[in-house]
Image 1: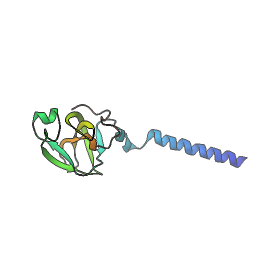
Image 2: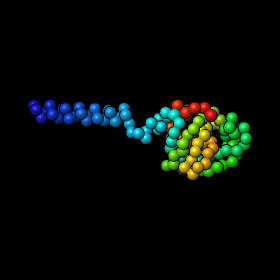
Image 3: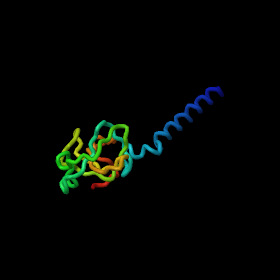
Image 4: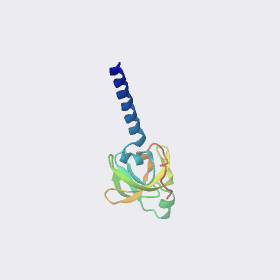
Length: 128
Protein backbone atom coordinates (compact mmCIF):
# COMPACT_ATOMS: atom_id res chain seq x y z
CA UNK A 1 0.00 0.00 0.00
CA UNK A 2 2.80 2.45 0.90
CA UNK A 3 4.49 1.62 -2.42
CA UNK A 4 1.25 2.45 -4.30
CA UNK A 5 0.92 5.80 -2.50
CA UNK A 6 4.55 6.67 -3.27
CA UNK A 7 4.10 5.68 -6.94
CA UNK A 8 0.93 7.76 -7.20
CA UNK A 9 2.66 10.75 -5.56
CA UNK A 10 5.63 10.44 -7.93
CA UNK A 11 3.33 10.25 -10.95
CA UNK A 12 1.41 13.31 -9.76
CA UNK A 13 4.67 15.25 -9.21
CA UNK A 14 5.81 14.36 -12.74
CA UNK A 15 2.51 15.61 -14.16
CA UNK A 16 2.78 18.89 -12.24
CA UNK A 17 6.36 19.43 -13.41
CA UNK A 18 5.42 18.68 -17.02
CA UNK A 19 2.43 21.03 -16.82
CA UNK A 20 4.62 23.78 -15.39
CA UNK A 21 6.96 23.38 -18.36
CA UNK A 22 4.05 23.85 -20.74
CA UNK A 23 2.78 26.94 -18.94
CA UNK A 24 6.10 28.69 -18.46
CA UNK A 25 7.92 27.38 -21.53
CA UNK A 26 11.50 28.38 -22.16
CA UNK A 27 12.96 31.85 -22.27
CA UNK A 28 13.36 31.76 -26.05
CA UNK A 29 9.84 30.58 -26.83
CA UNK A 30 8.01 33.85 -26.09
CA UNK A 31 8.48 35.14 -29.63
CA UNK A 32 7.69 31.85 -31.35
CA UNK A 33 4.00 32.38 -30.61
CA UNK A 34 4.02 36.01 -31.67
CA UNK A 35 4.33 38.25 -28.65
CA UNK A 36 5.91 41.39 -29.94
CA UNK A 37 9.00 42.76 -31.55
CA UNK A 38 11.97 40.43 -31.39
CA UNK A 39 13.75 37.48 -32.98
CA UNK A 40 11.76 35.07 -35.12
CA UNK A 41 12.97 32.05 -37.04
CA UNK A 42 12.84 31.75 -40.81
CA UNK A 43 11.58 28.33 -41.94
CA UNK A 44 12.47 28.45 -45.67
CA UNK A 45 15.64 28.77 -47.75
CA UNK A 46 16.63 31.67 -49.99
CA UNK A 47 14.08 34.19 -48.66
CA UNK A 48 14.62 37.67 -50.09
CA UNK A 49 14.88 40.69 -47.82
CA UNK A 50 13.81 43.66 -49.96
CA UNK A 51 13.94 47.45 -49.99
CA UNK A 52 14.02 50.22 -52.58
CA UNK A 53 11.13 51.44 -54.68
CA UNK A 54 10.56 54.55 -52.57
CA UNK A 55 7.32 55.26 -50.80
CA UNK A 56 5.41 52.44 -52.51
CA UNK A 57 7.72 49.88 -50.92
CA UNK A 58 7.14 51.26 -47.43
CA UNK A 59 3.37 51.69 -47.82
CA UNK A 60 2.59 48.56 -49.85
CA UNK A 61 5.45 46.07 -49.65
CA UNK A 62 5.72 43.48 -52.40
CA UNK A 63 8.35 42.03 -54.71
CA UNK A 64 7.38 44.60 -57.38
CA UNK A 65 7.27 47.61 -55.03
CA UNK A 66 10.51 46.66 -53.25
CA UNK A 67 12.69 45.60 -56.19
CA UNK A 68 16.09 45.77 -54.49
CA UNK A 69 17.10 42.50 -52.83
CA UNK A 70 19.31 43.47 -49.87
CA UNK A 71 20.18 39.90 -48.88
CA UNK A 72 18.72 36.40 -48.62
CA UNK A 73 18.12 34.42 -45.44
CA UNK A 74 17.64 30.69 -44.96
CA UNK A 75 16.53 28.39 -42.17
CA UNK A 76 17.63 28.13 -39.37
CA UNK A 77 18.40 31.88 -39.44
CA UNK A 78 16.58 34.29 -37.19
CA UNK A 79 15.66 37.86 -38.03
CA UNK A 80 14.70 40.72 -35.73
CA UNK A 81 11.12 41.75 -36.58
CA UNK A 82 10.41 45.45 -35.96
CA UNK A 83 6.98 45.91 -37.49
CA UNK A 84 4.52 44.47 -40.01
CA UNK A 85 2.45 45.86 -42.85
CA UNK A 86 -0.28 44.51 -45.09
CA UNK A 87 1.38 44.37 -48.47
CA UNK A 88 0.41 44.72 -52.10
CA UNK A 89 1.29 41.03 -52.61
CA UNK A 90 0.04 37.96 -50.75
CA UNK A 91 2.57 35.13 -50.35
CA UNK A 92 1.34 31.66 -49.44
CA UNK A 93 -2.04 33.06 -48.42
CA UNK A 94 -0.40 35.55 -46.01
CA UNK A 95 -0.94 39.25 -46.91
CA UNK A 96 1.55 40.64 -44.36
CA UNK A 97 5.16 41.72 -44.78
CA UNK A 98 7.61 42.30 -41.92
CA UNK A 99 10.40 44.88 -41.62
CA UNK A 100 13.43 42.94 -40.41
CA UNK A 101 17.09 43.21 -39.44
CA UNK A 102 19.21 40.23 -40.49
CA UNK A 103 22.28 38.82 -38.75
CA UNK A 104 24.38 40.32 -41.56
CA UNK A 105 23.06 43.81 -40.70
CA UNK A 106 20.68 44.22 -43.66
CA UNK A 107 17.27 45.82 -43.18
CA UNK A 108 14.24 45.41 -45.37
CA UNK A 109 10.88 43.80 -45.90
CA UNK A 110 10.30 40.09 -46.24
CA UNK A 111 7.06 38.21 -46.68
CA UNK A 112 5.69 37.27 -43.26
CA UNK A 113 4.77 33.89 -44.73
CA UNK A 114 8.38 32.78 -44.21
CA UNK A 115 8.46 33.73 -40.50
CA UNK A 116 8.08 30.82 -38.08
CA UNK A 117 4.83 31.91 -36.42
CA UNK A 118 1.49 30.15 -35.94
CA UNK A 119 -0.60 32.88 -37.60
CA UNK A 120 -0.27 35.36 -40.47
CA UNK A 121 -0.43 38.40 -38.17
CA UNK A 122 2.24 38.37 -35.45
CA UNK A 123 0.56 39.35 -32.18
CA UNK A 124 2.18 42.28 -30.42
CA UNK A 125 4.18 43.49 -33.44
CA UNK A 126 3.18 47.02 -34.42
CA UNK A 127 2.11 48.27 -37.83
CA UNK A 128 4.93 49.85 -39.82
